[in-house]
Length: 351
Image (tube, rainbow, N blue to C red; front, side):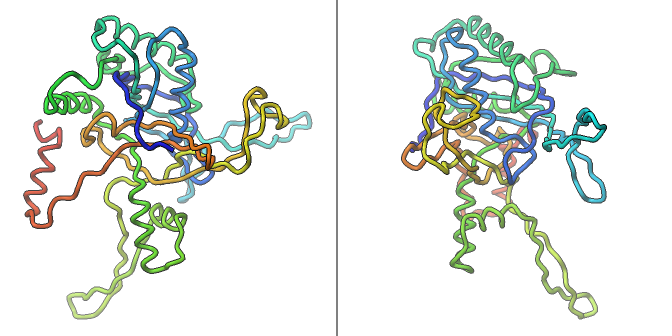
């Protein structure tokens, strides 16, 4: 399986999409924000819907979340989904239902596109293409939810944009152009992959328990852990104080794809399959860790993008992301210097 990101030479930005009643159950073990596979699936569905109407090939997709409203009820510290009421049966009883989780989203989608001979296309023609894609998307489902008109926003904040990328600038000018583009998506948070945190947590667990598995590391990172420590009070007595372990950054457990449980069956061999003309195999979810990070802290558009990858030998279908965390500051650097450097990258530092 290739882990290299697919190349693209254009960015399509669809800002501030309001999605109503999207699927909040992202996998058998996670809920909240839709799975990233829902957005890579949207990318393929959009490519098929457009067909020959666009000269671009959709290669990857990035997601920035501005707002999220889970449709849940919180009663006595127990959270449950708000479910719809189905019509009663003939005898007046309530029929069995399948629990559905819903969430309202305010997101920006960024697609990496590839097209030959379009580097010097007319900006007006590119803008027309962007509007056409936005119109087509408005009639589709996004993670199972409906696209709603934007409210209380200026037209320029919701205007779709299609631009060549990377631009024909020097590296420093390219980085400056990316900073200007990414700060349009503030306030918001981009979802990136953090497989490295899962690997480092597993190494830490195995130092204490050699039989620890990746599942143990995943659950340990996702859990809210409290530990007790002894502290001395002012009168000299010892007391127990509970402290919550907090991981650096907004780290979340996420599903990233599927792993095969069976061989690939021929089309039509499995009864009652949704698509009788496509080969089918049974799969289970694959999990990893993700991080919500401010877009202005990403180094380039490539770090934002997710793309699907498939390994026929192992039957692994999973989404990849090219984000690489920045190197920590040298231990010899003063703490105030590290904070000052961090503030220079903060867009609100200049307000």
